[in-house]
Length: 199
Ligand code: HEM
Image 1 (cartoon, helix red, strand yellow):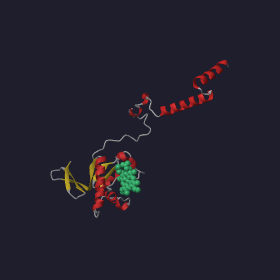
Image 2 (image 1 turned 90 degrees about the vertical axis):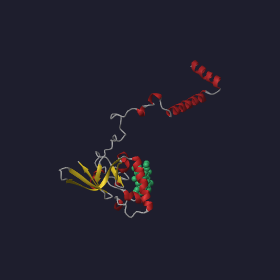
Image 3 (image 1 turned 60 degrees about the vertical axis):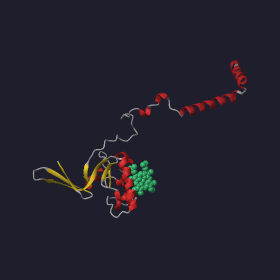
Image 4 (image 1 turned 180 degrees about the horizontal axis):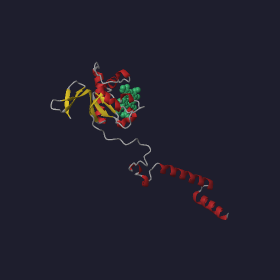
């Protein structure tokens, strides 16, 4: 008991504070210290977010993004298969007949995404008109005004910059046999220019 009284007297003697005030201030200082510490990263854990992500510790990230595969000529019908309904296939979308791999933006174009209706097709008309109307979900840019074509051009630049181009839309594909027995795959691009590839 004598020790307790001595400690209390010493606190009052050195700080000029009552023991109750002294301990309250001490507690407040501790809380402030803990709060400030929590704002900084412990040096030991500084690199934690840079450590390689393994299947064992990756619970939040989406599946690894695959390398884009070049598809070459693709018909509108074939492009439909890349609308995100099959998660094993890349997510593709075309602007002015050029096909882009938009898989990194699955949150926009994947099933349930706000722009899912653009996936697996040429969405030029909808983008030019800033329209979600199903009748505009196609690549027909006939009859568009100058400003609408400018809007479309801006979209095209954005996609060229952001996504890899993986092919081009062709309106039809026929495989014909040449005189010397070679198989020639004839495609027609959207502008109607025919070109041939020998297999
Ligand atoms: C109420 C009007 C709209 C709002 C608030 C809105 C908002 C947004 C936002 C916040 C983004 C994400 C931007 C980013 O992080 O890069 C976005 C992306 C996009 N928006 Fe809209 N949007 C609107 C209308 C439209 C319309 C009318 C279209 C076309 C018909 C459109 C097409 C797109 C496309 C294609 C993307 C994705 C671009 C990309 O792949 O980076 N949006 N929008």
